[in-house]
Length: 388
Image (cartoon, rainbow, N blue to C red; front, side, top):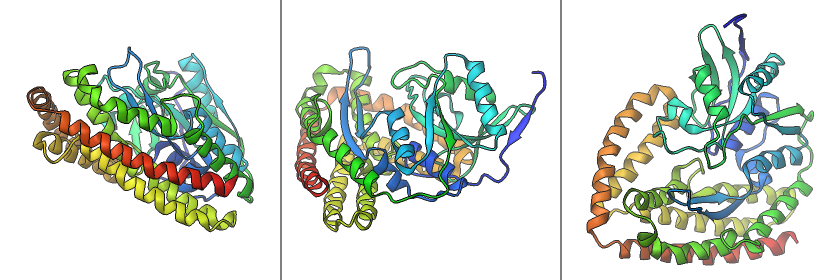
């Protein structure tokens, strides 16, 4: 490579977080002197939600618990706190890399979107593509072939420039990354009054959950999911059926801050209550903490204690997530060793799921989803009344 460059923002020291998009923005904003909680960013971006998404070309359904598409979520946050930003996308890998370098040269850490499979520090299987993952690039070293990354880990991370380009240019579904980055043109000197922004975001969250036009989204989507669960064993077989269970468990540790984002949203409502002078939000926050515990019970019910192999997979997956968040790349060997154990357990799990009666497992999941739905229906209708 000619004219190799080293462009590193030396004083960038913002790492770690709960959810990839709010983590990326919180860390960039903090570097620029704008301090705001990750929970407030979640609320302003769109808050919590639900989607059950399955198409025939998908091996397993996608289960999402946040409100807002990837692009609009980040743009909503920026707009509502007064940050001038846009999503920039290109089919050209070289053009995307040049754009990234130019922003770094201006001293700006850059929020990009990537396919997690191509980030070696996650040590993911090659077929679990997810291109909606947000990270911050704060440096490029072309001489030593390194990109410097801030992610949910408390420690800084590095990947090769080749892996960075692959992760950015991925076209694999769902949510192909397609060289997208969030280009921030201007920051406010300080974060102004958020009264209007909070009310607008809460109304949008309630609209998405209560009055959705599509049956697989929002509260109606939760009911649909409960109806579909008992039929999973007919619709999905072997490894794909296990994938349904694992995707359900992933609402607990897949960058949701735990409990499917609900405790984060509860804290947002508590912060918001004093800003918009609505003390009722504190009571509603408690309802979401209650539903959050049920979301964890749903996740655990998918890989329950009564199935020792599934329980072990659950425990090892939690440990992998903990190691990444605490140690980043320093924990990679431990993560790889866990993966070896998980691969062996996966075969045993599929075999056991073929032999045992899975109806009680699915029935338990169905009941917990219905119970969670009932709490959230009350919570969202009360929330809508408070901010109408």
